[in-house]
Image (tube, helix red, strand yellow):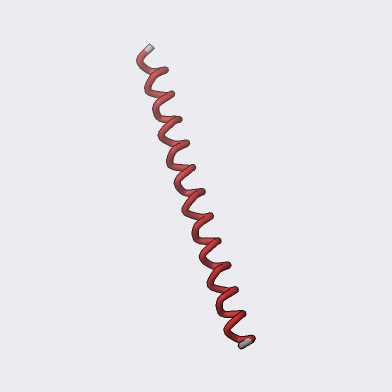
Amino acid sequence: MIALYFVVKWAVKNGMLEACKEIEKKKAQEALKADKTIIDLEQKK
């Protein structure tokens, strides 16, 4: 029973870490898009 607890705890921890990495990756991609848009706008001036 104790072993099952630790397996579930490990799985939840890894799931949370993976979700956080995906969120950070998405935010970085959005930031790059925003930077590119600003640069494009500045070049058009």
